[in-house]
Amino acid sequence: MKLTNFELWMDDKILERGLAYLKKGKVLNLTTSDEIHYKALVDGSEVYHVDIYLNDEVVVNAYCDCPYDLNEYCKHKAAVLYALREKKPEKEGLTTIVEPEEKSVRSILLNQTKENLIKIILDVIEEFPDIEKRLLFQFSSDEEEITSAKKLIQEYINRAKHRGFIDWRHMGQALQGAEMTLQKARSKLEMGNSQSAVLLSLTVLSPVVKMLQHADDSDGSAGGIINWALSLMDEAVTASLDFFSEQDQKKLFEAILKEAQKALYNDWSDWRYDLLKICTHFLNQKELRKKLEKQLDTLLEKAGTSWNAKYDHKEVKLLQLDIIEKCEGLDAAKRFIYENINISEFRKKAIAFEFQLEDYKKVVELCIEGEEADKDYRGLVKDWKEYRYKAYEMLGEVEEQRQLAKELLFKNEFIYYQELKKLYSAGEWELVLKEILTEFGRQKYHSSAYVSILLQENLTAELLRYCQDNVLTITEYYPYLIKDYLKEVNDLFIQYIMESADEATDRKKYRKVCALIKTYKKACGTIHSHQLITELRERHKRRPAFLEELERIR
Image 1 (cartoon, rainbow, N blue to C red):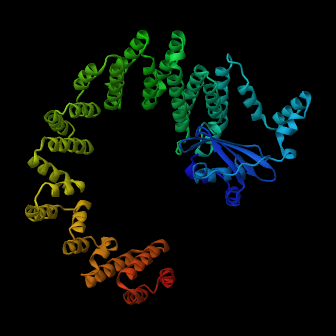
Image 2: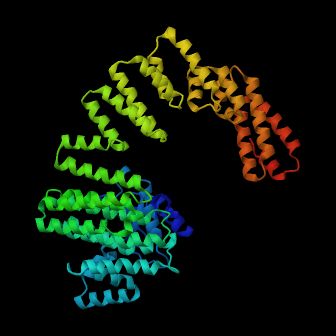
Protein backbone atom coordinates (compact mmCIF):
# COMPACT_ATOMS: atom_id res chain seq x y z
CA MET A 1 0.00 0.00 0.00
CA LYS A 2 1.06 3.62 -0.45
CA LEU A 3 1.37 6.34 2.19
CA THR A 4 -0.99 8.46 0.09
CA ASN A 5 -3.86 5.98 0.26
CA PHE A 6 -3.25 3.68 3.23
CA GLU A 7 -6.84 4.27 4.39
CA LEU A 8 -8.00 1.81 1.73
CA TRP A 9 -6.39 -1.03 3.68
CA MET A 10 -7.68 -0.21 7.16
CA ASP A 11 -10.92 -0.44 9.06
CA ASP A 12 -12.69 2.92 9.44
CA LYS A 13 -12.77 2.58 13.23
CA ILE A 14 -9.01 1.99 13.36
CA LEU A 15 -8.43 5.05 11.15
CA GLU A 16 -10.72 7.19 13.31
CA ARG A 17 -8.88 6.19 16.50
CA GLY A 18 -5.45 6.57 14.88
CA LEU A 19 -6.27 10.10 13.72
CA ALA A 20 -7.60 10.95 17.18
CA TYR A 21 -4.34 9.70 18.71
CA LEU A 22 -2.34 11.98 16.41
CA LYS A 23 -4.50 15.03 17.16
CA LYS A 24 -4.20 14.38 20.92
CA GLY A 25 -0.41 14.34 20.64
CA LYS A 26 -0.02 10.67 21.49
CA VAL A 27 2.69 10.17 18.84
CA LEU A 28 5.44 11.05 21.28
CA ASN A 29 8.53 10.43 19.19
CA LEU A 30 9.07 9.91 15.47
CA THR A 31 12.57 9.60 14.05
CA THR A 32 14.48 8.16 11.09
CA SER A 33 18.16 7.89 10.23
CA ASP A 34 17.82 6.76 6.61
CA GLU A 35 14.32 7.89 5.45
CA ILE A 36 13.41 4.21 5.07
CA HIS A 37 13.02 2.94 8.63
CA TYR A 38 10.88 5.22 10.84
CA LYS A 39 10.64 4.56 14.59
CA ALA A 40 7.92 5.96 16.80
CA LEU A 41 6.57 5.79 20.36
CA VAL A 42 2.80 5.97 20.77
CA ASP A 43 1.19 6.59 24.14
CA GLY A 44 -1.71 4.17 24.64
CA SER A 45 -2.58 2.03 27.64
CA GLU A 46 1.20 1.61 27.59
CA VAL A 47 3.89 3.23 25.49
CA TYR A 48 4.14 1.13 22.33
CA HIS A 49 6.93 0.92 19.76
CA VAL A 50 5.92 1.31 16.10
CA ASP A 51 8.27 0.67 13.17
CA ILE A 52 7.33 1.74 9.63
CA TYR A 53 9.42 0.89 6.57
CA LEU A 54 8.99 3.09 3.47
CA ASN A 55 10.35 2.79 -0.05
CA ASP A 56 9.54 6.21 -1.48
CA GLU A 57 5.75 6.37 -0.99
CA VAL A 58 5.23 2.61 -0.64
CA VAL A 59 4.68 1.26 2.90
CA VAL A 60 6.63 -1.99 2.70
CA ASN A 61 6.15 -3.02 6.32
CA ALA A 62 4.69 -1.89 9.64
CA TYR A 63 5.18 -3.28 13.18
CA CYS A 64 3.71 -2.47 16.57
CA ASP A 65 4.38 -4.27 19.85
CA CYS A 66 0.83 -3.77 21.15
CA PRO A 67 -1.27 -6.92 21.80
CA TYR A 68 -3.92 -6.07 19.16
CA ASP A 69 -4.31 -9.07 16.82
CA LEU A 70 -7.77 -8.72 15.27
CA ASN A 71 -6.33 -7.20 12.13
CA GLU A 72 -2.99 -6.43 10.50
CA TYR A 73 -3.21 -2.74 11.41
CA CYS A 74 -3.81 -1.21 14.82
CA LYS A 75 -4.63 2.37 15.81
CA HIS A 76 -1.00 2.96 16.81
CA LYS A 77 0.24 2.15 13.28
CA ALA A 78 -2.52 4.33 11.83
CA ALA A 79 -1.49 7.27 14.03
CA VAL A 80 2.14 7.01 12.91
CA LEU A 81 1.16 6.69 9.22
CA TYR A 82 -0.92 9.87 9.55
CA ALA A 83 2.07 11.57 11.19
CA LEU A 84 4.39 10.44 8.41
CA ARG A 85 2.03 11.72 5.74
CA GLU A 86 2.05 15.11 7.44
CA LYS A 87 5.87 15.06 7.25
CA LYS A 88 6.17 15.45 11.02
CA PRO A 89 9.80 14.16 11.13
CA GLU A 90 10.86 17.02 8.85
CA LYS A 91 8.69 19.80 10.24
CA GLU A 92 9.19 19.47 13.96
CA GLY A 93 10.97 17.45 16.59
CA LEU A 94 8.37 15.63 18.64
CA THR A 95 9.11 15.30 22.34
CA THR A 96 10.94 12.13 23.33
CA ILE A 97 9.70 10.58 26.58
CA VAL A 98 11.30 8.26 29.01
CA GLU A 99 9.10 5.22 29.39
CA PRO A 100 8.09 4.33 32.92
CA GLU A 101 10.36 1.53 34.07
CA GLU A 102 7.52 -0.55 35.44
CA LYS A 103 5.90 -0.63 32.02
CA SER A 104 9.06 -1.36 30.03
CA VAL A 105 9.03 -4.77 28.36
CA ARG A 106 12.82 -4.54 28.17
CA SER A 107 13.16 -4.17 31.92
CA ILE A 108 10.82 -7.10 32.51
CA LEU A 109 12.75 -9.37 30.17
CA LEU A 110 16.11 -8.34 31.62
CA ASN A 111 14.95 -9.64 35.00
CA GLN A 112 13.98 -13.09 33.67
CA THR A 113 16.11 -16.21 33.81
CA LYS A 114 17.29 -17.83 30.59
CA GLU A 115 14.77 -20.67 31.09
CA ASN A 116 11.91 -18.21 31.56
CA LEU A 117 12.90 -16.25 28.47
CA ILE A 118 12.93 -19.42 26.38
CA LYS A 119 9.51 -20.36 27.73
CA ILE A 120 8.12 -16.87 26.98
CA ILE A 121 9.42 -17.00 23.42
CA LEU A 122 8.08 -20.50 22.81
CA ASP A 123 4.67 -19.51 24.20
CA VAL A 124 4.55 -16.48 21.91
CA ILE A 125 5.59 -18.63 18.93
CA GLU A 126 2.82 -21.10 19.70
CA GLU A 127 0.27 -18.27 19.58
CA PHE A 128 1.89 -16.44 16.64
CA PRO A 129 3.53 -18.98 14.26
CA ASP A 130 4.87 -16.24 11.99
CA ILE A 131 7.29 -15.21 14.70
CA GLU A 132 8.96 -18.60 14.44
CA LYS A 133 9.65 -18.01 10.76
CA ARG A 134 11.05 -14.57 11.50
CA LEU A 135 13.35 -15.88 14.21
CA LEU A 136 14.60 -18.82 12.16
CA PHE A 137 15.35 -16.49 9.27
CA GLN A 138 16.84 -13.73 11.42
CA PHE A 139 19.27 -16.11 13.09
CA SER A 140 20.05 -18.38 10.15
CA SER A 141 23.75 -18.93 9.50
CA ASP A 142 25.49 -17.26 6.57
CA GLU A 143 25.49 -20.61 4.77
CA GLU A 144 21.74 -21.03 5.24
CA GLU A 145 20.45 -17.45 4.85
CA ILE A 146 19.94 -17.51 1.06
CA THR A 147 18.08 -20.84 1.20
CA SER A 148 16.06 -19.60 4.19
CA ALA A 149 15.26 -16.34 2.41
CA LYS A 150 13.99 -18.14 -0.72
CA LYS A 151 11.80 -20.40 1.38
CA LEU A 152 10.44 -17.51 3.46
CA ILE A 153 9.62 -15.34 0.43
CA GLN A 154 7.80 -18.16 -1.34
CA GLU A 155 5.84 -19.23 1.76
CA TYR A 156 4.30 -15.78 2.14
CA ILE A 157 3.50 -15.58 -1.58
CA ASN A 158 1.83 -19.01 -1.56
CA ARG A 159 -0.16 -18.21 1.57
CA ALA A 160 -1.59 -15.03 0.00
CA LYS A 161 -2.90 -16.85 -3.08
CA HIS A 162 -6.58 -17.58 -3.48
CA ARG A 163 -7.39 -19.91 -6.34
CA GLY A 164 -3.96 -19.24 -7.77
CA PHE A 165 -4.31 -15.42 -7.72
CA ILE A 166 -3.29 -12.67 -5.28
CA ASP A 167 -5.67 -9.72 -5.19
CA TRP A 168 -4.57 -6.22 -4.21
CA ARG A 169 -5.86 -6.59 -0.64
CA HIS A 170 -3.42 -9.43 0.04
CA MET A 171 -0.34 -7.98 -1.62
CA GLY A 172 1.01 -6.75 1.71
CA GLN A 173 0.79 -10.25 3.13
CA ALA A 174 2.37 -11.77 0.01
CA LEU A 175 5.37 -9.44 0.20
CA GLN A 176 6.18 -9.86 3.88
CA GLY A 177 8.89 -12.46 3.25
CA ALA A 178 10.51 -10.24 0.63
CA GLU A 179 10.35 -7.26 3.00
CA MET A 180 12.02 -9.21 5.81
CA THR A 181 14.74 -10.30 3.41
CA LEU A 182 15.44 -6.74 2.30
CA GLN A 183 15.45 -5.53 5.91
CA LYS A 184 18.08 -8.15 6.66
CA ALA A 185 20.02 -7.10 3.56
CA ARG A 186 19.94 -3.49 4.78
CA SER A 187 21.26 -4.61 8.18
CA LYS A 188 24.03 -6.58 6.48
CA LEU A 189 25.03 -3.51 4.48
CA GLU A 190 25.06 -1.32 7.60
CA MET A 191 27.33 -3.87 9.29
CA GLY A 192 29.72 -3.77 6.33
CA ASN A 193 28.76 -7.12 4.82
CA SER A 194 27.97 -5.77 1.35
CA GLN A 195 28.34 -9.14 -0.37
CA SER A 196 25.55 -10.70 1.69
CA ALA A 197 23.45 -7.57 1.15
CA VAL A 198 23.74 -8.00 -2.63
CA LEU A 199 22.97 -11.72 -2.60
CA LEU A 200 19.97 -11.33 -0.27
CA SER A 201 18.58 -8.50 -2.41
CA LEU A 202 19.08 -10.62 -5.50
CA THR A 203 17.09 -13.42 -3.88
CA VAL A 204 13.97 -11.24 -3.76
CA LEU A 205 13.77 -10.51 -7.48
CA SER A 206 12.75 -13.74 -9.24
CA PRO A 207 9.93 -14.83 -6.93
CA VAL A 208 8.38 -11.35 -6.83
CA VAL A 209 8.64 -10.84 -10.61
CA LYS A 210 7.09 -14.30 -11.16
CA MET A 211 4.34 -13.40 -8.68
CA LEU A 212 3.31 -10.46 -10.88
CA GLN A 213 2.02 -12.91 -13.48
CA HIS A 214 -0.81 -13.91 -11.14
CA ALA A 215 -1.29 -10.86 -8.90
CA ASP A 216 -2.99 -7.45 -8.89
CA ASP A 217 -0.23 -4.93 -8.20
CA SER A 218 -2.38 -1.90 -8.96
CA ASP A 219 -0.94 0.06 -6.03
CA GLY A 220 2.66 -0.69 -7.07
CA SER A 221 3.70 -2.56 -3.90
CA ALA A 222 5.50 -5.37 -5.73
CA GLY A 223 7.16 -2.92 -8.09
CA GLY A 224 8.29 -0.93 -5.05
CA ILE A 225 9.85 -4.04 -3.50
CA ILE A 226 11.72 -4.85 -6.73
CA ASN A 227 13.01 -1.28 -7.06
CA TRP A 228 14.06 -1.33 -3.40
CA ALA A 229 16.04 -4.55 -3.99
CA LEU A 230 17.72 -3.09 -7.09
CA SER A 231 18.65 0.19 -5.39
CA LEU A 232 20.00 -1.71 -2.34
CA MET A 233 22.14 -3.87 -4.64
CA ASP A 234 23.48 -0.85 -6.48
CA GLU A 235 24.26 0.91 -3.20
CA ALA A 236 26.04 -2.15 -1.80
CA VAL A 237 28.17 -2.64 -4.94
CA THR A 238 29.19 1.02 -5.34
CA ALA A 239 29.93 1.41 -1.63
CA SER A 240 32.21 -1.62 -1.35
CA LEU A 241 33.54 -2.45 -4.82
CA ASP A 242 37.09 -1.32 -3.98
CA PHE A 243 37.12 -3.62 -0.95
CA PHE A 244 35.96 -6.76 -2.78
CA SER A 245 38.60 -9.24 -3.86
CA GLU A 246 38.69 -10.10 -7.56
CA GLN A 247 37.13 -13.44 -6.71
CA ASP A 248 34.27 -11.81 -4.80
CA GLN A 249 33.73 -9.31 -7.62
CA LYS A 250 33.50 -12.16 -10.09
CA LYS A 251 31.05 -14.05 -7.85
CA LEU A 252 28.72 -11.06 -7.50
CA PHE A 253 28.98 -10.06 -11.16
CA GLU A 254 28.09 -13.55 -12.36
CA ALA A 255 25.19 -13.81 -9.91
CA ILE A 256 23.74 -10.49 -11.11
CA LEU A 257 24.34 -11.30 -14.79
CA LYS A 258 22.74 -14.73 -14.38
CA GLU A 259 19.65 -13.09 -12.90
CA ALA A 260 19.45 -10.62 -15.81
CA GLN A 261 19.61 -13.49 -18.33
CA LYS A 262 16.44 -15.15 -17.01
CA ALA A 263 13.57 -15.39 -19.48
CA LEU A 264 11.11 -13.98 -16.93
CA TYR A 265 12.54 -10.49 -17.61
CA ASN A 266 11.50 -10.66 -21.27
CA ASP A 267 8.23 -9.00 -20.20
CA TRP A 268 9.87 -6.78 -17.58
CA SER A 269 12.91 -5.56 -19.51
CA ASP A 270 13.38 -2.35 -17.50
CA TRP A 271 14.44 -4.44 -14.50
CA ARG A 272 16.77 -6.48 -16.72
CA TYR A 273 18.50 -3.29 -17.83
CA ASP A 274 18.73 -2.11 -14.21
CA LEU A 275 20.56 -5.33 -13.36
CA LEU A 276 22.92 -4.93 -16.33
CA LYS A 277 23.55 -1.32 -15.28
CA ILE A 278 24.75 -2.65 -11.91
CA CYS A 279 27.06 -5.01 -13.81
CA THR A 280 28.84 -1.99 -15.36
CA HIS A 281 30.40 -1.28 -11.94
CA PHE A 282 32.66 -4.31 -12.46
CA LEU A 283 34.38 -3.12 -15.66
CA ASN A 284 37.81 -2.93 -14.02
CA GLN A 285 38.15 -6.65 -14.79
CA LYS A 286 38.57 -7.22 -18.54
CA GLU A 287 37.15 -10.72 -18.31
CA LEU A 288 33.93 -9.42 -16.76
CA ARG A 289 33.71 -6.59 -19.28
CA LYS A 290 33.91 -9.10 -22.14
CA LYS A 291 31.13 -11.19 -20.60
CA LEU A 292 28.91 -8.14 -20.24
CA GLU A 293 29.63 -6.99 -23.80
CA LYS A 294 28.82 -10.47 -25.09
CA GLN A 295 25.51 -10.42 -23.22
CA LEU A 296 24.66 -7.02 -24.70
CA ASP A 297 25.47 -8.26 -28.21
CA THR A 298 23.16 -11.23 -27.61
CA LEU A 299 20.37 -8.91 -26.50
CA LEU A 300 20.87 -6.78 -29.62
CA GLU A 301 20.43 -9.85 -31.80
CA LYS A 302 17.24 -10.80 -29.96
CA ALA A 303 15.95 -7.21 -29.99
CA GLY A 304 15.28 -7.45 -33.72
CA THR A 305 12.57 -10.04 -33.08
CA SER A 306 11.09 -8.65 -29.87
CA TRP A 307 7.70 -6.90 -29.67
CA ASN A 308 9.48 -3.87 -28.21
CA ALA A 309 12.50 -3.96 -30.54
CA LYS A 310 13.12 -0.21 -30.79
CA TYR A 311 13.09 0.29 -27.02
CA ASP A 312 15.32 -2.73 -26.37
CA HIS A 313 17.79 -1.60 -29.05
CA LYS A 314 18.00 1.85 -27.45
CA GLU A 315 18.53 0.53 -23.90
CA VAL A 316 21.29 -1.87 -24.99
CA LYS A 317 23.05 0.87 -26.95
CA LEU A 318 22.94 3.19 -23.93
CA LEU A 319 24.55 0.48 -21.81
CA GLN A 320 27.24 -0.01 -24.47
CA LEU A 321 27.86 3.74 -24.42
CA ASP A 322 28.20 3.63 -20.65
CA ILE A 323 30.91 0.94 -20.99
CA ILE A 324 32.77 2.95 -23.66
CA GLU A 325 32.65 6.16 -21.59
CA LYS A 326 34.05 4.36 -18.54
CA CYS A 327 36.69 2.33 -20.36
CA GLU A 328 37.71 4.11 -23.56
CA GLY A 329 37.21 7.81 -22.95
CA LEU A 330 35.48 10.79 -24.53
CA ASP A 331 36.69 10.47 -28.13
CA ALA A 332 35.56 6.84 -28.41
CA ALA A 333 32.25 7.74 -26.78
CA LYS A 334 31.68 10.56 -29.28
CA ARG A 335 32.37 8.25 -32.22
CA PHE A 336 29.89 5.73 -30.83
CA ILE A 337 27.29 8.44 -30.34
CA TYR A 338 27.51 9.52 -33.98
CA GLU A 339 27.37 5.90 -35.13
CA ASN A 340 23.98 5.68 -33.38
CA ILE A 341 22.77 9.20 -34.06
CA ASN A 342 19.28 8.07 -35.11
CA ILE A 343 18.54 7.12 -31.51
CA SER A 344 17.07 10.30 -29.99
CA GLU A 345 19.01 10.02 -26.72
CA PHE A 346 22.25 9.81 -28.70
CA ARG A 347 21.29 12.79 -30.87
CA LYS A 348 20.71 14.84 -27.69
CA LYS A 349 24.16 13.82 -26.41
CA ALA A 350 25.72 14.83 -29.75
CA ILE A 351 23.95 18.20 -29.61
CA ALA A 352 25.30 18.71 -26.09
CA PHE A 353 28.82 17.97 -27.37
CA GLU A 354 28.49 20.50 -30.18
CA PHE A 355 27.11 23.16 -27.86
CA GLN A 356 30.18 22.68 -25.66
CA LEU A 357 32.42 23.03 -28.72
CA GLU A 358 30.38 26.12 -29.81
CA ASP A 359 29.79 24.56 -33.22
CA TYR A 360 26.26 25.93 -33.52
CA LYS A 361 25.97 25.23 -37.26
CA LYS A 362 26.52 21.55 -36.49
CA VAL A 363 23.76 21.81 -33.86
CA VAL A 364 21.38 23.20 -36.49
CA GLU A 365 22.30 20.39 -38.87
CA LEU A 366 21.70 17.72 -36.21
CA CYS A 367 18.35 19.27 -35.29
CA ILE A 368 17.05 19.51 -38.85
CA GLU A 369 18.03 15.87 -39.44
CA GLY A 370 16.27 14.93 -36.18
CA GLU A 371 13.08 16.74 -37.17
CA GLU A 372 12.93 14.74 -40.38
CA ALA A 373 13.87 11.41 -38.75
CA ASP A 374 11.34 11.84 -35.91
CA LYS A 375 8.56 13.62 -37.80
CA ASP A 376 5.99 11.16 -36.42
CA TYR A 377 6.95 11.99 -32.81
CA ARG A 378 5.63 15.41 -31.88
CA GLY A 379 7.51 15.67 -28.59
CA LEU A 380 10.89 14.94 -30.19
CA VAL A 381 10.25 17.36 -33.07
CA LYS A 382 9.56 20.06 -30.47
CA ASP A 383 12.85 19.21 -28.71
CA TRP A 384 14.86 19.50 -31.93
CA LYS A 385 13.24 22.81 -32.81
CA GLU A 386 13.98 24.24 -29.36
CA TYR A 387 17.64 23.20 -29.62
CA ARG A 388 17.75 24.73 -33.12
CA TYR A 389 16.25 27.99 -31.82
CA LYS A 390 18.98 28.19 -29.18
CA ALA A 391 21.65 27.60 -31.84
CA TYR A 392 20.21 30.37 -34.05
CA GLU A 393 20.27 32.65 -31.01
CA MET A 394 23.95 31.89 -30.44
CA LEU A 395 24.66 32.48 -34.15
CA GLY A 396 22.77 35.78 -34.10
CA GLU A 397 20.52 34.67 -36.98
CA VAL A 398 17.47 36.78 -36.17
CA GLU A 399 15.33 35.95 -39.19
CA GLU A 400 15.69 32.20 -38.56
CA GLN A 401 14.76 32.79 -34.92
CA ARG A 402 11.63 34.70 -35.95
CA GLN A 403 10.45 31.99 -38.32
CA LEU A 404 11.08 29.17 -35.85
CA ALA A 405 9.53 31.06 -32.93
CA LYS A 406 6.33 31.49 -34.97
CA GLU A 407 6.28 27.77 -35.80
CA LEU A 408 6.55 26.90 -32.11
CA LEU A 409 4.01 29.51 -31.08
CA PHE A 410 1.43 28.09 -33.52
CA LYS A 411 2.09 24.68 -31.95
CA ASN A 412 0.80 26.17 -28.67
CA GLU A 413 4.18 27.08 -27.13
CA PHE A 414 3.28 30.48 -25.66
CA ILE A 415 6.79 31.10 -24.30
CA TYR A 416 7.90 31.83 -27.88
CA TYR A 417 5.45 34.72 -28.05
CA GLN A 418 7.69 36.47 -25.55
CA GLU A 419 10.72 35.54 -27.63
CA LEU A 420 9.11 36.98 -30.75
CA LYS A 421 8.41 40.32 -29.10
CA LYS A 422 12.11 40.64 -28.31
CA LEU A 423 13.01 40.13 -31.98
CA TYR A 424 10.97 43.09 -33.31
CA SER A 425 11.04 46.80 -32.66
CA ALA A 426 8.00 48.50 -31.12
CA GLY A 427 7.14 49.97 -34.51
CA GLU A 428 7.23 46.59 -36.22
CA TRP A 429 5.35 44.68 -33.56
CA GLU A 430 1.81 45.99 -34.23
CA LEU A 431 1.81 44.52 -37.75
CA VAL A 432 3.40 41.26 -36.58
CA LEU A 433 0.79 40.86 -33.83
CA LYS A 434 -1.99 41.35 -36.38
CA GLU A 435 -0.47 38.63 -38.58
CA ILE A 436 -0.20 36.26 -35.59
CA LEU A 437 -3.86 36.80 -34.63
CA THR A 438 -4.95 36.29 -38.23
CA GLU A 439 -3.06 33.00 -38.40
CA PHE A 440 -4.60 31.81 -35.13
CA GLY A 441 -7.99 32.83 -36.50
CA ARG A 442 -7.58 30.38 -39.38
CA GLN A 443 -7.20 27.48 -36.96
CA LYS A 444 -10.29 25.35 -36.40
CA TYR A 445 -9.67 25.11 -32.65
CA HIS A 446 -8.07 27.98 -30.76
CA SER A 447 -5.19 26.96 -28.50
CA SER A 448 -4.42 28.18 -25.00
CA ALA A 449 -1.50 30.16 -26.48
CA TYR A 450 -4.01 32.23 -28.47
CA VAL A 451 -6.02 33.03 -25.34
CA SER A 452 -2.83 33.91 -23.45
CA ILE A 453 -1.97 36.43 -26.17
CA LEU A 454 -5.43 38.01 -25.90
CA LEU A 455 -5.04 38.32 -22.14
CA GLN A 456 -1.52 39.71 -22.29
CA GLU A 457 -2.37 42.28 -24.95
CA ASN A 458 -5.72 43.13 -23.28
CA LEU A 459 -7.65 42.37 -26.48
CA THR A 460 -11.03 42.14 -24.79
CA ALA A 461 -13.15 42.29 -27.97
CA GLU A 462 -11.33 39.25 -29.38
CA LEU A 463 -11.56 37.52 -26.00
CA LEU A 464 -15.34 38.08 -25.93
CA ARG A 465 -15.67 36.51 -29.39
CA TYR A 466 -13.63 33.55 -28.16
CA CYS A 467 -15.99 33.11 -25.17
CA GLN A 468 -19.03 33.41 -27.44
CA ASP A 469 -17.62 30.56 -29.54
CA ASN A 470 -16.74 28.56 -26.40
CA VAL A 471 -19.49 29.44 -23.92
CA LEU A 472 -18.20 27.39 -20.98
CA THR A 473 -15.02 29.53 -20.88
CA ILE A 474 -16.99 32.53 -19.61
CA THR A 475 -16.62 31.24 -16.04
CA GLU A 476 -12.84 31.60 -16.36
CA TYR A 477 -12.48 34.80 -18.37
CA TYR A 478 -15.36 36.97 -17.17
CA PRO A 479 -13.08 39.08 -14.88
CA TYR A 480 -11.29 40.39 -18.00
CA LEU A 481 -14.59 41.26 -19.75
CA ILE A 482 -17.02 42.41 -17.09
CA LYS A 483 -15.92 46.05 -17.11
CA ASP A 484 -16.55 46.66 -20.82
CA TYR A 485 -19.06 43.94 -21.70
CA LEU A 486 -21.41 43.47 -18.75
CA LYS A 487 -24.48 42.69 -20.88
CA GLU A 488 -22.62 40.21 -23.10
CA VAL A 489 -21.10 38.47 -20.07
CA ASN A 490 -24.54 38.26 -18.44
CA ASP A 491 -26.05 36.77 -21.61
CA LEU A 492 -23.27 34.17 -21.92
CA PHE A 493 -23.67 33.10 -18.28
CA ILE A 494 -27.46 32.72 -18.70
CA GLN A 495 -26.99 30.73 -21.92
CA TYR A 496 -24.44 28.40 -20.31
CA ILE A 497 -26.43 27.87 -17.09
CA MET A 498 -29.71 27.28 -18.93
CA GLU A 499 -28.12 24.72 -21.24
CA SER A 500 -26.43 22.98 -18.30
CA ALA A 501 -29.69 22.87 -16.33
CA ASP A 502 -31.57 21.40 -19.29
CA GLU A 503 -28.96 18.63 -19.61
CA ALA A 504 -28.74 17.85 -15.85
CA THR A 505 -30.41 14.59 -14.84
CA ASP A 506 -29.31 13.87 -11.26
CA ARG A 507 -28.46 15.63 -8.02
CA LYS A 508 -24.72 15.64 -8.70
CA LYS A 509 -25.28 17.55 -11.94
CA TYR A 510 -27.81 19.87 -10.28
CA ARG A 511 -25.12 20.83 -7.77
CA LYS A 512 -22.75 21.67 -10.61
CA VAL A 513 -25.40 23.95 -12.08
CA CYS A 514 -25.81 25.63 -8.69
CA ALA A 515 -22.04 26.12 -8.49
CA LEU A 516 -22.23 27.90 -11.85
CA ILE A 517 -25.00 30.11 -10.51
CA LYS A 518 -22.81 31.10 -7.55
CA THR A 519 -20.06 32.13 -9.98
CA TYR A 520 -22.65 34.04 -12.01
CA LYS A 521 -23.81 35.82 -8.85
CA LYS A 522 -20.22 36.84 -8.11
CA ALA A 523 -19.78 38.11 -11.67
CA CYS A 524 -23.07 39.88 -12.37
CA GLY A 525 -24.62 40.50 -8.99
CA THR A 526 -27.41 39.26 -6.71
CA ILE A 527 -30.31 40.79 -8.65
CA HIS A 528 -29.39 39.02 -11.89
CA SER A 529 -28.77 35.70 -10.12
CA HIS A 530 -32.15 35.85 -8.30
CA GLN A 531 -33.93 36.53 -11.57
CA LEU A 532 -32.23 33.53 -13.13
CA ILE A 533 -33.05 31.28 -10.16
CA THR A 534 -36.72 32.31 -10.39
CA GLU A 535 -36.79 31.42 -14.07
CA LEU A 536 -35.08 28.07 -13.41
CA ARG A 537 -37.60 27.17 -10.70
CA GLU A 538 -40.47 27.77 -13.08
CA ARG A 539 -38.77 26.00 -15.96
CA HIS A 540 -37.86 22.91 -13.89
CA LYS A 541 -40.72 22.78 -11.37
CA ARG A 542 -41.12 19.03 -11.94
CA ARG A 543 -37.58 18.36 -10.65
CA PRO A 544 -37.83 18.49 -6.84
CA ALA A 545 -34.19 17.54 -6.29
CA PHE A 546 -33.08 20.46 -8.45
CA LEU A 547 -35.43 22.81 -6.61
CA GLU A 548 -33.93 21.68 -3.29
CA GLU A 549 -30.42 22.48 -4.53
CA LEU A 550 -31.54 25.88 -5.80
CA GLU A 551 -32.96 26.65 -2.33
CA ARG A 552 -29.49 26.14 -0.82
CA ILE A 553 -27.91 28.94 -2.88
CA ARG A 554 -27.08 31.88 -0.66
